[in-house]
Length: 359
Ligand SMILES: *Cc1c(COP(=O)(O)O)cnc(C)c1O
Image (spheres, rainbow, N blue to C red):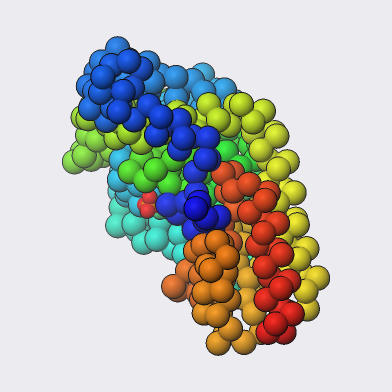
């Protein structure tokens, strides 16, 4: 039986995509081999990679002057690669701290240049985002970095920060493709694949052409955007299966009607779940209303002893991986693009039933 998998990442993938991959696993496109066994330089695979890129461009409306790179090392690798590519030791960079992932990015950037923390939401225990007008970017900053969706805290920016003319850099790992965005407002977008794109092992970087070509000496070529762009992300052997799967997911998104349609579906899923939490008098969302994530929904029960019971009982009825992150506890339902509305409905029904028995 296939469960509803609420894991934060690696996360659920569309059933249609998994079935397609399964059907063509042993004999891909009549080659007599699986896609994992063909050369990344073969005509057939290069076509897959090119199609994945063009579909992503179409879905997100990526301007022609932006490079799309398929890299390895996850979003975590980019915490390092970004300052290596976009700064000198003299640079000042601005970071907005809204939680766990922002903090990790800041720690890395500090190894390379001066980091100014534009805003830090510690006072609310990272349950808020800063007021847009309070952000005062440093004049001449090499870039402004933020995390549009904090996967662990479930905090999502309802606005795009004004970077004061500096390139805006965004870790979109858990929000990419979940709603329409204006890519032209960003200097660099990066996203680990294992939330909304495909299997882990792949990270997508969308970077404005004028920002590349200035990597520091000593930057590993596989993380030097210019070197990778020049080679079509194939300076070394890319994660071919991941790129193939990402391509299937992009094609699936197009068949759903694109990001407008998916975004509307995500809004409905999230609003339903938050309404159930808020209306229960039992469950509670720790996140301020205006910045509640559409993708990662943390919630608590009145008594922490009930958390384990909740997750165990949910697991028994096919609702998997609802434990909150080990650093924060509670519960968390990740409801990415591939989570059908039926999964959210099943969770809400279970929550009601659990409350009747334990409330
Ligand atoms: C998951 C995640 C990461 C880390 O991704 P890795 O691929 O494990 O490096 C970084 N940032 C955000 C916002 C995430 O959700």
